[in-house]
Image (cartoon, rainbow, N blue to C red):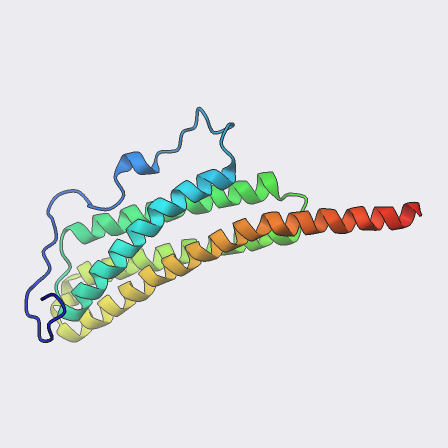
Length: 190
């Protein structure tokens, strides 16, 4: 069984193009973008990114346990995750600007979270570059490299969740701000 202690089997990584994020899943429908809300676009990107990051984290943890050399497909898969995260941050920033320009606190929260996702993406790219370097034949350095990659992949996952929480909570905050403004106006009229 897969849960047997002392497993010695190795994980096999499919050769060829990255096995995460088929290109068609990340293409935004720009012709119908006006009909879609930016929030719906964020949701679409998040679903795809969430699946991909989960797959990557599981794979990286398994490879870390084996202290394996970097398989050829992992850099491409990692780049696909980083590109999806970059698309998410681009859309989140557009959402902050277009939908929350009148709400500077909300706008700042979204932009700050997007910045954090970008940092995590850069960390992930650097971890992959480090694992791919020639000095990774040293077992201790490879272990450290895998640890950095796991931390960076988890960082992307956590920061993208933060963006989602802010975006979904932003509508509630906007309604509260509008409600407060209406109450204030009602008080002034009396």
